Amino acid sequence: MTGLITKGIGGFYYVLTEEGTIEAKGRGIFKKDGITLAVGDIVEVERTEDGNGVISRIYPRKNQFIRPPIVNVDTFLVVFAPAQPKPNYMLIDKFLIMAEMHDIDPILCLNKCDLVSHDTVEEIRAIYDGVYPFLTVSCRTGEGLDHLKQLVCGRKTALAGPSGVGKSTILNHLHPEANMETGSVSEKTRRGRHTTRHVEIFPLQGGGMIYDTPGFTSFEILEAEEDTLADYYPEIALLKGQCRYDDCRHISEPDCAVRNAVATGRIHPRRYESYQANLEEIRRRKKY
Image (cartoon, rainbow, N blue to C red; front, side):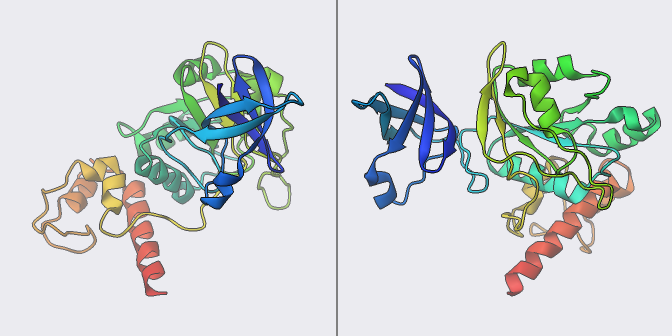
């Protein structure tokens, strides 16, 4: 029968089927072929005599990630906060680049918006205005949570973002039965204590599913290349072909449409600074 892998622990996979959840192991052929089963996989599972199961087939994947090991994601819910901890825009933009590279629709979710003024929230919103969907929520007051449920309804959504921004609390609101352990922000480091231990998918009321993803808190390596990085910034990609040089990197070249757009306010300076920093990171990586 066909099912969805919702959790994997210690070589055992929990497959949601029309007959309920089956604990199963993968056939040896997967290991032989170097294939690792992952949360989100659509699989064929066969019942064994002991009532458990064996996974015999994996259906084609829409996309996949190694860390954390998840597949078939429709949406990234990129959660961050305006304070406690302060926004890490470089990390946020890395999540957005990753989404663009894997054909995933990102939603920016500013949690803890009750901690700062309306003007501060709007300053943050302006960075991504017209580029990505931007939602403000407060798990303390309940602001924006109903809208969030509407946005993720019917989608397979992965939670992403730094520790301490409230991902587990948001998950609890979206799926109360998850009853996830939530962590406080360390007083010493002002960083969140990581509380999630494994990847798991939870069903949502009204359709759709949400991945709880402990590995989506940082990136060690940006996977983009120098000649394609600009394609993963939508506001920069819109200007493709408008610079004097076809291979313009938008750093110091004359008659650069991107730098002109920054100067005239069509591209937010913080996004351009992010592009510059990521380009430099890619160039440093190529040296070694």
